[in-house]
Figure 1 (spheres, rainbow, N blue to C red):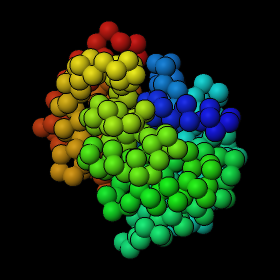
Figure 2: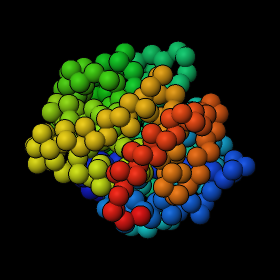
Figure 3: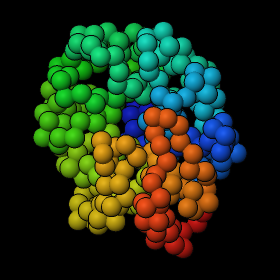
Length: 304
């Protein structure tokens, strides 16, 4: 794929698949394959294994490699794969090189979790990864409001394969300024806070958005994208209204149950187990019925 083709793949619903586990906590590869096929059959064309909804930080290096391999094998030309990488530079580089060998076309670099991150160090970190895989598209995941846009412009000038940005600071005005300081047309801007923020971020220059909700109701996510592409914000906001409560449950208590709510909905639909790994925890019993009711309403009459 050319970088222009990869840019097109980012201007999509960038699905972040869950990583299903068996009741004893092992990878549930059969359920994982079935969920990926469900996304592909629904029309999803961009997949990010090892994203936060996939419990990246709760997986071992071997498990992350297995998840990447399983996803690229299942995609098999039907979708573009953006593998999540991160941790220390050698670990991220090794994961990126493995992703390239496995057939991924891009890597999404998780926001560094080191307690001491300077803007210059952020550039150095991403440049080391990008230079190690010059044939892959590279997408930084920006979660910190402290990073100035000119630092991203600096990275882009040094690394032509840094082609997109997953921007996840919950401030649409800050995003608009950051994108323009970095280069609105230089990068593909992906709204990294998913459907709740997609309409406001699209109005400021985003052309794609990430989604964990898409695991449960692909038609809703794809419907919002179609509305935003058409410039029909009232129609996009109709989808926003449908998904509002589900996303409120995910974002409550500093997103403590972000993954849990998605897995609970999938469990209610009989698509995978609800098991998550610490530091996540299963949804309290009182909220399970509400999530199940939302999922049932969304998928009534929809193909499984």
